[in-house]
Image (tube, rainbow over all chains, first blue to last red; front, top):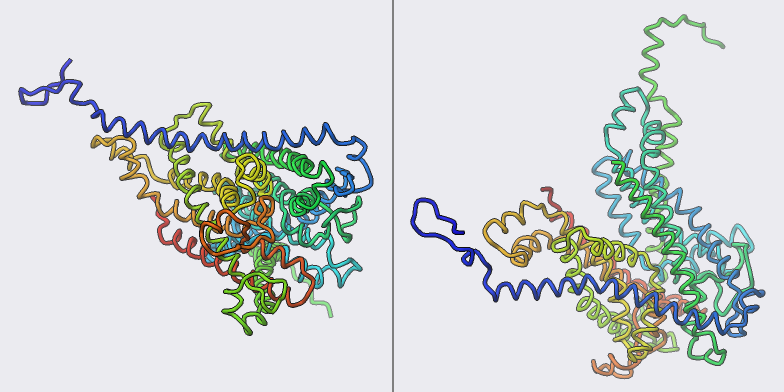
Amino acid sequence: MTIHAAGRGTSLVPADLQIAPARRRRERLIRAFFLGAAGLSIVISGAIVLSLLGNALYFLVNVDQSALFTDGWFPRRGMYDIATIVAGTVVISAVAMLVAAPLGLGAAVYLSEYASAGSRRLLKPALEILASIPSVVLGFFALTWISPNLVQPLTDAPLSNMASAGLAVGILITPLIASISEDALHAVPSYLREAAYGLGARRRTTSLRVVVPAAVSGIIAALLLGVSRAIGETMIVAIAAGGTGGSLFELNPLEPGQTMTAAMTALAIGSDSVRGEALTFESLFFVGLLLFAITLGLNLLSEAFVRRVRSKY
Amino acid sequence: MTAPVQALSARDVVERRLRSAGGDRLGLVLQVALLLSLLISLGVLVVLIGDIVVRSLPVFAERPVDFLGSALSSRPARAGIIQGILGSVLLMGFVAALALPLGIGAAVYLEEYARDTPAARLIRTNVRNLAGVPAIVYGLLGLAVFVSSLGLGRTLVAGGLTLAVLVLPIVVITTSEALRAVPATIREAAFGVGATRWETIRSHVLPYAAPGILTGTILSLARAFGETAPLLMVGAIAGTFTSTAVGDMLTGSYTALPTIVYSWSGQPQDEFRALTAAAIVVLMVVILLVNASAILLRNRYDRKW
């Protein structure tokens, strides 16, 4: 089988079209490196699950079952009440969502439906800057500004309380919710808006009755991701919620409380000094597994909603 | 005083209806409320920066150089952050050296080599989920794998590896987006003149995607710079460098800027409040500069195909 070059007598054999062996070897080598890099993510996931599971199972097998359902979370005294740290996490995430859901969604609708192109170019980077503030900084801000200036004047809460921490977590996740829901609103095709205007609808009717319902899957995804981030947020809670060392079961946001993440920080920092209580190190991984499972569930659910948006438009 | 009732012609009624947009009070209220929700979020940013700068003034007014150049101390008048700065810089070196080549490599595989197979889909889903894992869980991974199993102990190497694993999925995702924005025609042009896949990637795809990749990776480094919780898990708490020789810094106890902020914020004295604020100012200056330059870079090279 030969290919004849047009007009001349010379001919190409398949070997002429084949890649030189050295060049081919290099291609294979580079491809193998890239494949290895991609495969590494699976290895990391495996390592996360295995390291969490191993120690968490050891904890569950060896812990006195009654210690998991007691009056509070005091690992140094062998009290591992799961309800306490879950309650703290729920309270703080709820306060955070009360702040972040309206602020984030409002900002998203404004940016997508009302803002001019010029102000968008200014406002969106400003939100990105807000998103880039490290959580340890917001924790300090919650303890030294939010609590004495916003929470304590209105209530008789102590300096460290769950409400202040929750407000700061809300500020942290607002840009996240705003940016994801803005993407969802932006993805709504403009013909839907034009159809509404064509029927004589006002801008508010178009925004709230047409665009927002059309983007509702993406908005739910944004809110779910916000909850997931709030649950996993650590430093704000560790600094401002006042649960160092341990806490009794507490549902009042104006009291200090302990979350899963803050409990882990407290355990890790004190892990050298508390080796006396046999299971504190392993309990760290048990809480970590619980946190991992909850956030993974929320993230997967959120992704399912995002997929619905993609398939629609 | 009631105005005499006028009979409205049909024409008036229609005109009023058509002009009612200007009188849509509810619409105006909504618009103001939406704008407010945006401005409140940004107002917090302004208050936060202002409050922290004011708090830090005593430190920067009295001993700016001394604060930056001194070691940690339990005496507020002598405490400084030089160990934190060195620790954070070395940690970033680890993250850049490990996470950037591996993350970019993984993204190149997923976007340029992999077909739409179940395995490739699994990797993609997996990367997305890794990006959503709370930072503190990466700290547990570092504690179990790097500190304990690999026997690195509570050292800067273990901390650097942990942070590298943490930002890896973010690097993969942002690089993938940058690669996807390069149109297929660019690749076809290279294939058309006989380039192999790697030659196409090296000479055509990567140069066009470079600004996007750079922006994404810079932002992920900034994220790693301020990350605290995983470092606490792998032991960067009250550690201090025993000497400033690089070898000792890598194998001994260590600290980083954000973990200093955390441990100082737990001190009740006013002097330490000022020191914490000053350390935050240093941290934020770095992060804001990095973010601003990334945003400028993106605006400058943002191209539509």
